[in-house]
Figure (cartoon, rainbow, N blue to C red):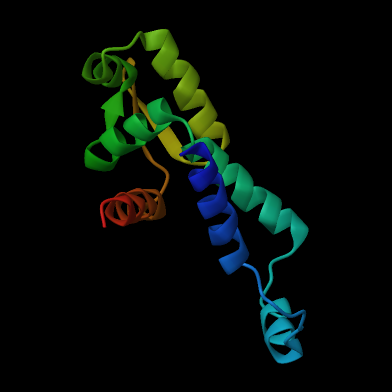
Length: 128
């Protein structure tokens, strides 16, 4: 059975590779003109790395529903305030959230609507 799986895997891999070497210059030129520069590509990669943490995603999801203070988020997610504060610091440094102080309470919210839209679209995608 192990051999059959190995053969099937090799066959599938071969089906994903062209049988000839050919460069489609018109496609290459078209796509090349639309590629982003390396600095932007790096920033985009960092953006998705920030989203790659489940705790940060939970915080962003909560903040997409309401502005909240650290105490509220900690209670909602059943985590310590210090753990939430650490993740909020990362999110703020990477321009996902903003905060405002009202009296003695600091409220956090999403930096802009794009963060909510990206999260909701990603969720819709994984549930297709």
